[in-house]
Image (cartoon, rainbow, N blue to C red; front, top):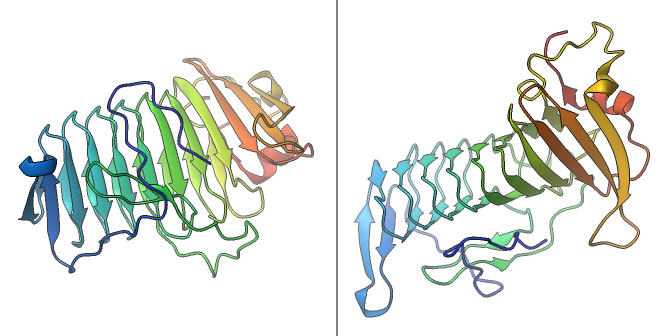
Length: 286
């Protein structure tokens, strides 16, 4: 699955296929700015401030703290426990460690979490990301999938997430987000109170994935027995736009502050509101 077509100038580039991710010594970072004859590379350590200049960062520290403004950043974090906070640029963030907290602004962003997700491989400055190996089977057991436990918070842009590992939380913004999570397990997707659009490939009702609707449905009057849940959540099926023979499940969730749409790709026609409520939905107190 390719990242969404950017709608803003300077969106994250797409480099040649098969680029091998760089690796640096643990406890170090490498920041590159500029291009051509003006390109400079500097050794950096946490805390790392990227300012508002387009740059490429490779870091392999434990507990790195990385901040940046509204420029375009290309970040590869190989350490664990990183905190990455960026502004409204069109950024590409890859984390191959675990326990990262990633907070992005309102740009059109590409995020890669974990390994073995079949997403783009990381490229260098001015290069980009080429698609890597196929993802593991969606039937992978939790013992075969590493616990990555990363947290991603998004803004109002158009975003693409390649999600590997398990135990991740994605706090969705009000924009449109596509998630490729085939082979991932036990992931938690939180819809914003003002709504937004989520397209999710790899969602399963049997591997611990959840859709958290507590913010979006905050303030609605749910019956204690959920007999009126259908007044706030509609469930329909549609033919997938890109793959012949695939059937998607589409949820339309109407809250007091906005409406959210969730498209569960290639889930067939058997999902119902009742089955989703039992297996996968997190609802406000009722």
